[in-house]
Amino acid sequence: MNREERVRAALASKDVDRVPVATWMHLSQFDQDPISLAEAEVELTEKYDFDYIKMMPFGLYSTQDFGNQLTIYCDPYEEPIVKRFAIQSPADYDALRAIPAIQGTYGKQIEFARELIRRRTPGTPCIQTIFSPFSTLKKMAGDRLLKDMISYPEAVHHALAAITATTLDFVSYNIDAGVDGFFFATQNAVRTMMSPDQFQEFGAFYDLQVIKSYAKKTWFNAVHIHGEDIYFNEVASYPVNAINWHDRHTWPTLKEARNLTDKCLMAGIKSAPYFVDGVLQYDDIVLDGTPEEITAHVKDAIEQVDGKGLILGPGCVVNPKASEENLRALRKATEL
Image (cartoon, rainbow, N blue to C red; front, side):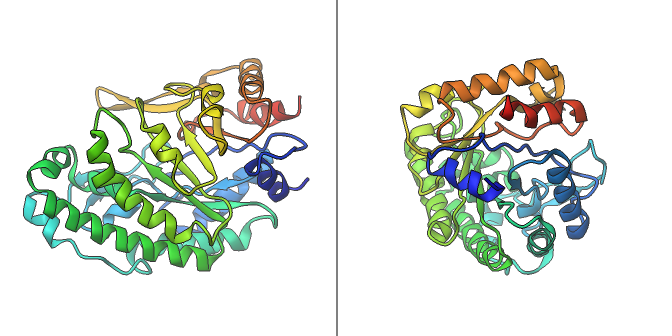
């Protein structure tokens, strides 16, 4: 099987010659330049013979054109951070307007998609990363959004509608660029952030507008559920064909998830970034494990679902300090 055949078979829960695998990490020394980032992602994929490319635009790309002020380091171990939130008052929600995704920072990610598709090895699936509208807005407002959606719901809905319209435009340009699908990341589908009713009103309502716009136009569409105590069943019902979450850190496990959904599970590799006193830390087997531990880890993931309907991937980004030896062990483990 080639890469695309292997991934398509896994998505359809058909037999594969081996379970497809890839990992992804922030490439912050390259991610402000579309060509450099495309070259780096292709190089990473070919160096380790991964089966697909989960595209890695920097995590705040969807906020900058709306007014977020960022500090950008261009350092491999220091990701961009918010210097000043775009949302400083309730009136700022009402001031948001949809913007053309072909320009600015959004436009750079479209150029990244074009350059990556042009450079990839034929038959290597590529999926573009997009964020749920609420996730983007929270990166623009910070924690005040959780209070504002209660106190100023109409203003928050106005902002979410503007972000949704911009995201739809961004999706369209990426399809034109030739991506095979999308990695839709929601960072708010957690019970500690939203009640079920709030999630449906401020989260799922807008999520589905975005996902339905491409669900029948692209073939490799994953959803990432970030965090713990997640709305797994609710998000698993979205019209996607692969589900990614922190399966090694929160319910459900791979085995439990297989009893909840027949969709492809895109998980199995322990990786979760978190902050301790403002410093980013990683619980990451690819960083901290030995090759032998990584091999056993991969085998355990495969055994949990009998190797069916599984695409191996990390629960979240892998630390860019992960060793070449460990990355090679991750890929090799699928053949043992």
